[in-house]
Image 1 (cartoon, rainbow, N blue to C red):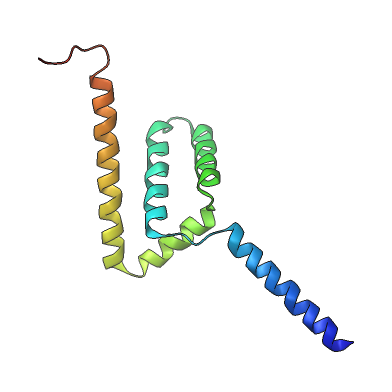
Image 2 (image 1 turned 120 degrees about the vertical axis):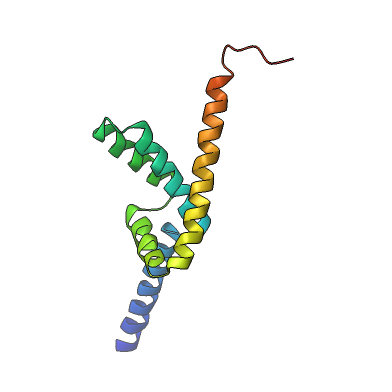
Length: 116
């Protein structure tokens, strides 16, 4: 009888751990960079409205499948390795510059005639 209880407990525990890992996937470097860039853009777009910023951040986390805690944990891990943080930061900067460039090009072409 005791053996069945222990086996049941082990199966239950394994199921819970397995489910929790599936519901919150591990964050990769690429995931972190993309999430960071989205969050940074949200700050730029909602700087004057803290409620709108909070709501946009929540929306970004929900769509990404990651939690704020996972994001913060990944940041803490990067803090332990400055060389890796620098590499990640370079990727973040490159994506932010690309998005800024795309946004400027999109604004500049509206209503203007193309050069011949």
